[in-house]
Amino acid sequence: MKKNRIGTLVFGFFLALSTVFSGGCVVLVSAAAAGGVAYYKGSLTATLPYNVEKVESAVRATLDKDLRFALINSAEDATGAEYTARNSQDEKIVIKLRRVDDAITKIDIRVGVFGDESTSQLILRKIEKRLN
Image (tube, rainbow, N blue to C red):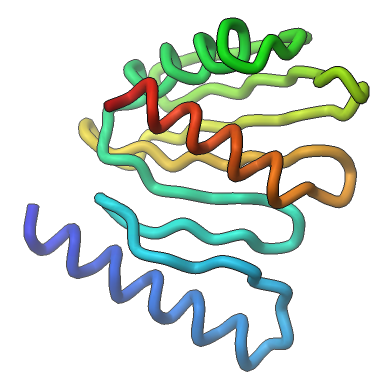
C-alpha cells in the first residue's frame, strides 16, 4: 500500500511538471488521500481511495439528492461507470469512473463543452463528503 501511495505522488509530480513545460492549462494540482487532483483541459481528474462500487453510489446520491441534476444516462460495469447529467443551466455534466484496483477509483468530471472548474470542484467535494 505504501508503494502505491509513493507511485501516485511521483506520478502527480511528473504530471504537474510536464504541464508546466508543455504550456498546458493545469489550474490545480494537489495531493489527495490516495493520489492527486488535477484540472486540465476542462476536466477535473482525481484518484479516490474507495472501490468503484462505493464511488458509484456516492455519485448517484450526489447527482440526485445533493445537486438535483437531471440524470440523462448511466452505464456501469465491473471496470467503471459513466454518468451524463444536466444542471439547471442545461450544461452537460459527464462523470467517468475507472477502477484502478480493488480499493482505488479514478474519477473524471467535465462540465459543459469547455469545462467549468468551480462546478467540477463542487461536484467532487459533494462526492467526497458522501464517501466519508
